[in-house]
Length: 273
Image 1 (cartoon, helix red, strand yellow):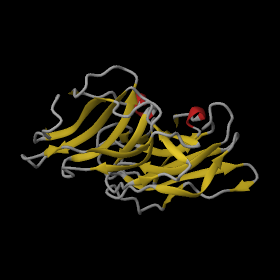
Image 2: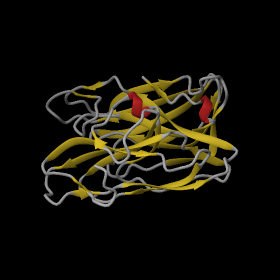
Image 3: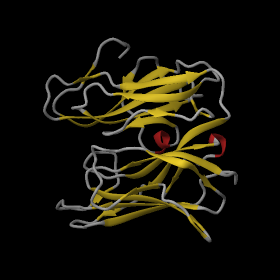
C-alpha cells in the first residue's frame, strides 16, 4: 500500500483472493482512451483483472478488499482474462474515462509459487480532444443460475431486451465473452422481428477454452435498435460431484458478455438477468 515501485506479494497458498489497487484518476477532464493494453506481470497467479471507475473517494495508493457484483459491472472501463489482447478503437470512437477515482480489481490464485509477486495493470493511449462517439462497456448474460451435477451442454440463457435506456439506437463495436472452467460453448444472438442478423459472438459447443478468452470485433458495427433482443447462451459441462452456481470464485461459474458500445449516455450498463 502506498508504494508504486514494489510488486504486490501474492502469498502461497492463496485461493480466490480479490485485491483492489486504488488511484486518483491520472487523466485530465475530457480525455478519452483511444487504445489500451493489458500489462500482465506474474501470469502464474492472476485469474483476471477489471479496471473500474468510482465516484467514491479512495486513498491514493491504497490496497484492500474489493466490492463485487453490480458496482463493478456497471462502471467497468476495461478488463483482461487469459487470452486477452490489446484494443485499438476506430478513429471516430473514444472510451470514457470520466471518473474521479480508479480501482484495479485483480483476482489472484496462487497455490504453488512462494515467489509470487505481481505488478499487473493496464496501459492507455488517450486524446485530450473528445471523439465523435463516446463509448462505454455494458454487461450481458445471466447472474442467477445453477448447473446441475453431471450436466452436459447445459444451457444458461440471459436476454437483454433494453440495451438502450432511452430508445436510442446503440452501436456495438466489440464483444468479450467470459465463463470459467466448466464452459463448453457460448453465443450471443442479435434478434429482430422479421430479420436475420449475424451472431455477436459464436463459440461452438466443445470449443471454449478458459485460457483463450478473445474479443470479437463487430465488422461492420452492429446496430441495436429499440425492440431488438440480445440473447446470450452459455453451455456448461459439469463433471463435478455437486451442482455449481454463479459466483466470483474460480470454482463457481459466470455467463457474461462484455460489450463495447456507444452512445455511452444511453447505454444500459447491466443488461443481465
